[in-house]
Length: 437
Image 1 (cartoon, rainbow, N blue to C red):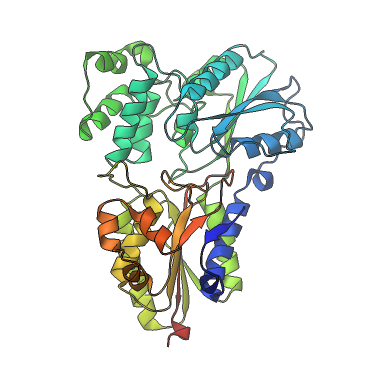
Image 2: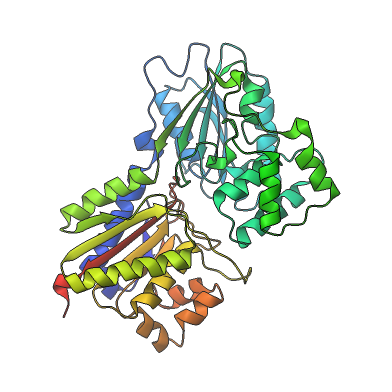
């Protein structure tokens, strides 16, 4: 990980900040495909391996697979722009493409069309290995007949801005796609399909990671319509036709054609939090795990965690509060910059109201929070005063979704660049009441 916290030298010298940064670095490293992707003896298969993949971890997963298979693999993976191979790296005969995220673009469509063609041509003695990680839903775009890419993209964006969670968004995506919700595996059958996943979804449901291209789908067309209605997305005649045609329903768990398929989660939020916890214990902190699958609204979770921290600060001692998952944000100002981790930190700081000796870090393990160039940010004692001295008000910034500008002015953004993994958000709060003045 290329850690580049935009911090003043005085902040970097603070022991608690070094602990925060060390914990995040170890969390990201533990979830790396180069550490987690292994093949059993005899794999990738006697007939050879076709490797397909999508997600923010796709490039590193391709590197790891190619190394583990001794170069005995061919295929294609797609990742976000800037998250691909670096100079001097090679994944052998596994091609690495880059495409748009969070909004799919023409490159996303080309990647999906090429994967559909490759899966459809698989020989019976070959095995399809699908390397999947978070972000793959946008990176593979193959709309069903009757809906355009622009319309599909607009629906997903509307759901995101309205605060829909990842399961709700993916329920709709799967029922508008020719490749998601198990359809890619259908194209490969009767050949075997093995899925290796780095999970970014709370609860680690394989069907939700990148909308599950190789995993049978437990949701239905009726569920997709329910989600659209809940978030007041218009359903015109053409959209209703796509979502009601019997031939457009996704394959379901228990379908006989999936009986020989295998899937495995090789890294998840727990992987990252375990590594961070070991570092924190070695640094002298007692650790409380608040959950690795938290999906509440970012502002509500930040306030709730602040209340826990205030109680711990009164008790004294050195405490660390760890959590993961994916919070949600309702964006009232689509042009603003921020992200769910900065919204969480803002709510945390406002509720703490200047409590001394409390430090926090919240960041996305893929290196990008929202639509900025940052992974997240940090909270330090005196944050609110620092902002006021610069003419900034955190409460106003939070209400307008402009949290990036606030943390940028306070020099408390965390910029790490693409990490090439994705186990979703990492949150850590330190209470060092034993050092309070």
